[in-house]
Structures are given as C-alpha cells and as structure tokens.
Image 1 (cartoon, rainbow, N blue to C red):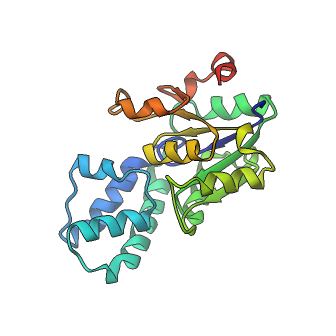
Image 2: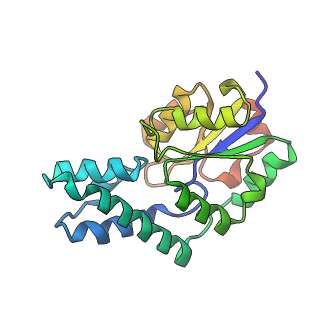
Length: 218
C-alpha cells in the first residue's frame, strides 16, 4: 500500500532534549539519594516519565507515595530547560519540507505530556506543518505499546499500512512495528551499531540523510 502519512516521535528525534531530561531527572533524583549511571539512565530512555520514576523508585526501594510529585517536578524542570536551551536536531527543516512537498499527512506521537509537546512544537516552529498530535502520557499503556501511534493514524484518517514513522528509541521502534507501520530509526550515535536496531525497516544517522531513494525502498 502506498505510503501517504508520516508520524514523528519528538524527544531525541526532533529536539536535542534527551540531555535535558537527564539533567532534570538528576537534579530531582539527587534529593532522594538516587544517582543513575549513564547505562542505567539509557536503559529506561523512551519510557513515560511516570514509568521512569516508578521504575527507579522501585529499584532503589523508595516508597512510591512521592512518585507523582517527582514526575511533575521533572516535567516542569524539563520545560524550563527546553525553553532555556532546547535546540533542533540536524535535518529538522529538511525532513518537514521533504514530506510537505510530497503532500504527506504529518503527525507527531510522543510519550511526553501535552504541555511539553506544545512548548517544543512552538519552539521548533513546526506547528503549521503538523496535522495531528497525540500523547501517550495519559494512555493506559505507553511505548512500546502501539496505541499512541494508532491514535495518531486514526486522527489523520490513515491506515497503519499507509504510515512511515521516525523514532530514536528502542521502545518507540517496537511501538511502530507493533502498529504495523514502517519504521525509520535514527539512534544516538553511541548505540547506533547495536543489533537491536535491525528490527527497523531503515536506520539512518540523521534526518538530513533521508531522501526520495530511501523512501522508495520502504
């Protein structure tokens, strides 16, 4: 079936926000005596903030009574950091122009809450390009469950088999594949050679590298 819809993840794909999430989590977690190694933090990349907090609170045997407050504190701090120093990742303008020129329906499906999505969309000045935005923050299941992608496709009146999705995280990639959509993964360069990315339909090093020839291979 012909592809006519593109859906993007947000954090770590369109905006260089993963270091900001790390910074915010480190600040908030320090008050609870939680110190995550680089490997530990990366192991939970792609989870919703609620799941991220509950996972590490449970791991470090900290009562969950403060988990909701910590979740909100991290999100609010990330919003502050994004406003202060959030930057688009390479290829942002290219990829949106590429699909706009081809009359694709364009969606965004993020694990982040809507208030953060709105801040990023306006900061990156991409709102006029996007036809649908869905958040997994308040869904029963987040990525790797496919619901947030299926919801976005439904809002766009697109079949899953008409969609190509761009992701940077492993849970996101699995969510796309579970939704029966084509997945282009743009992993962090430090993990780009890991075999797990072979589950994607295509792996590229930057959004800037996507082109017509690669589109035709999908």
